[in-house]
Structures are given as C-alpha cells and as structure tokens.
Image (cartoon, rainbow, N blue to C red; front, side):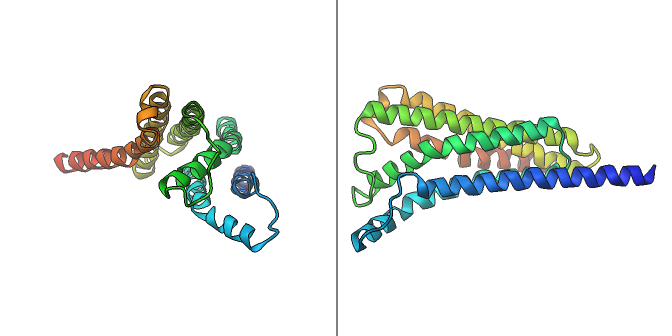
Length: 230
C-alpha cells in the first residue's frame, strides 16, 4: 500500500514536471516570436542601428510575456498536483500566449514610436484610427482571455490545496482576484477603444491598464485594514 502511494506520488510529480517544462518551452518560443516576427537578416551597420532601436519595444513586450510566465510558475508552486482541468487550462494558456504575442508586438512597436515622438521604429504599422481601434480591441480580448485563464487556474489551486493550509489558500485567492481584475481591465480597454474617444485620445485604451496596479494596491490596503480590525 505504501509503495503504491509512493509510486502514485512520483507519477504525479513527473507529470507535473513534464507539463511545466512544456509550458516553459512555449513561453520561450513566444519570446523568440517577438524577435522573429518581422525580423530580417542584418546587411549593414544601418540595419544594426535599426535593430537596436527596437530594443525598447522588445523590452516592453518581453516584460509582459515574463509576467505571464511568472504567474504560471507561481500557480505551479501553489498547486503542485495536476489533474485534467489543470492540464487543460495550462494548455489553453500556451495557445493564448502564442496568439497574443502578435498583437502585443504590433502594439508595443507602435506605442514606443508614438512615445518617442517618432524617433523609434514603428511608423506605418498602424495607419488609421480604425486600425488602432481594432488593434486595441484584439489586444484587450487576448489580454482578458489570458487573465481569465489564470483566474481559473488559481481557483483550481484553491481546490487542490489542503484547507488546513490557510496561507497558501489565501495566496491563491488573492492571485485569482488579481487576474479577475486584469481580465476586467482588458475588456474595459477594448470597450473604450470601440468609442470615439480613441480619436481624441489614442493613448487612453493603453493607459486604462494602469487600473491594474491601482486596483491591486487598493485590494492590499483593504486586506491590511481587515487584518487590523480582526
């Protein structure tokens, strides 16, 4: 009986490691797409300078991809056990990331070009407000889908964690709340992009994502006040 339990535990551990390794490799491939998409071999020093000028856009997109990867690693540490639901959600995250990387690349290139006053590459990628509007909408939907998948993953973690482990259960609940906020923010950004405001303030749908750190801070403040009251 003991040997059977040990064998089952080892099997779950191997299964978890294989799933996490697959997810890690998929995120690594997504990062490579940030470079490969639209990249051309360097043929001159001017090409080198043009490639170096794309570093700020790459850094922004890279940071967001890494943020999603770190979230999956956090989920993995909170919920080491894997079931069919966890596997399906993780695979859905992989699929969504590999699709999400393309509007992410387009938006970061355009944003850095706009913020730099035209000094950085990105001119002509989006040539009208309608294209900008739809780019924000597509990006917002992708961001919301990814965030929603993570919210479901951390909800699954709450079910897998031992109820006696209050700290881990609370951490999973807080992460679920954060990703639900992120999903709602992505939808709000896409909704704003559908209005006429984007013509007057093309930066507004992007600035909407600042609601995420503000919301996280407010949630943390509320939790702190509740602990003091208790």
